[in-house]
Amino acid sequence: MKKKIIICNWKLNGDKKFIKNFINKLNKYSKLYNNYIISISPPIIYMDYTRKLIKNKNIYLTSQNVDINIQGSFTGDISAKMLKDIYTKYIIIGHSERKIYHKENNKILLKKIIITKKLNMIPIICIGENLNEYKLKISKKICKNQLKYLIRKKGINIIKNSIIAYEPIWSIGTGKNANIKHISKINKSIKKYLINKDINIKNKFKIIYGGSINKINANKIINNKNIDGLLIGKSSLNLKEFINIIKNINNN
Image (cartoon, rainbow, N blue to C red; front, side, top):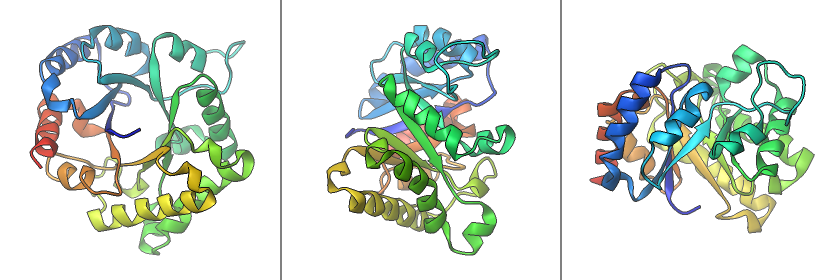
């Protein structure tokens, strides 16, 4: 897991016309992101359509969600097996919007992580503090506690070959991004915490950052030694903005 990764989370946005235009143009810029792993996360209904448009080996698919069941009478849900069948590589798990709007708790998130890893896909495990916790300066504690549950239940290997996405809840979609010093401090703290649990986990996971990323701040964030990539929301929906982000981080 050496290359830094950039995940484009489109959330509940886009249609076939938008996706075709975006991916066809993105294909033309392939030389810009050869040094990175790029993964597109469209609405699930468009994932296979998106995959068929991708022409670059460094661009992958990420799912915004997965069910805890492989198959059965679960109306409206999407299984890890189905996602694997359309060549999905990554699955976002525990995003704050899923926790808030769908009441997903630690028990559900753990089941999703287990089933994702069972089918050899990579979970993107989202953690982060709310505004009050940030103001109280307990961000480190909150983030570690969110990982402690997983480790207590399944051991440190639950983190192996996973991606941890630090996304301060107060920053998502607000235009207020955490400063680079804070992000670096949190990521470094998490890495130290996990490695202290088991030295063999070192270099077996990534910690990325998400939260109001744009062409101005992306360069400093991704090139920090404690940050292994970006999880981009709104800015990844604007092709010009996204390409400018890639250009800026390449020109560092």
